[in-house]
Length: 302
Image (spheres, rainbow, N blue to C red):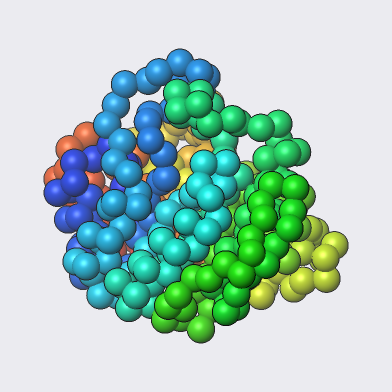
């Protein structure tokens, strides 16, 4: 099992970069960062809060590190043009000397689309747009020229030069729906989902059935999962968290409990666990200490 770090985009830049360096120093697998422009409210309403922009943060992360993979988790194709995504990703592959992973999704956050006047299309249209976008990005990574005529995009002799350093610059798709999983199986190299082991098991079943539907071996894709981690020896507190609205997306308990739950991910076939810092403490020191505790007390048992 491999482990990656995911700081909240609201953190100060110096903390974000400190955590990136920590991940590199501790030999973690990856560094992920959300691609959003404002705090999520769940509606068209504005929610206050700082949000740093991923495509400005990642070059700094690449320059400060030498080992961790890095990428957006995930960039919405409802917002970004596929040619722009391809060129950004390839440049970052060069800046990082071949460590870039392009995370993609169809888009979902209501208030940022509303605020910026970007249409958040109906789910079916959004997925259809995504399906065209991922094909264009993959082609621009791999081919000298890309020609494409679809319902959403037209590309004529489009180029993306230089080509990536990696023989195959990976595309990761964050999704749980069956249609999106089929698209992932056809065109991506990695799949990502949310949830504690029970929730992730359901998503994994959908993913594997979708792969089989398009004659793709699900083990041929690298798979990752993230949850909200609460490191606590207080059994009552852990029980309350598990029974809360966010319980299905959470893992709350002692180090030994967390080790056991991560072992369940491994049994499900996941290759990577992503640890967000969202619940790891109120201060920068708290969050850094939590990641150090993961490295010292949890990872060696797996």
